[in-house]
Image (cartoon, rainbow, N blue to C red; front, top):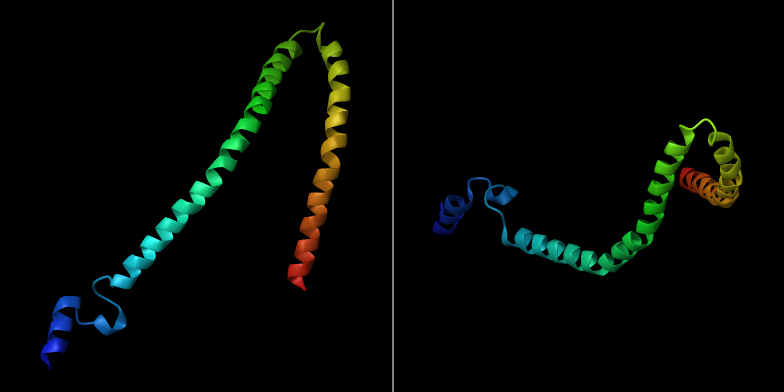
Amino acid sequence: MSAYTHNLIAGNGPLAGMHFGRVHAHTAHTATIVKRAKNVALFLVAPFVGLAYLLAFPVIGFGMLAWVAAKAIMKSDTARPVALAIAAPVIALAFVTIGPIVALGALAATGAKALLKA
């Protein structure tokens, strides 16, 4: 056995040619590149995540306020019919607004399944 082979086996283990043993330098370099790419992607996406939080916060806050108020009103027998009469047009408007968006999503999903199946 030559000195080079002996040193290679001693340093990396008997299965060096099969990529067993110590981690090779190129995998550490690849891991560094992947880590940096992830950091750059997070850096570029961070303003949009912040904007999503900024836009969602008032909607979620008003929704929670409405939820607590609705629970309190539904406990009252006198205010319940009035609250339901006021809520009915709002619920109908929500269904009319969201319905076409949900339908387009369902249509797009069905089309995508058909394209992927063919």
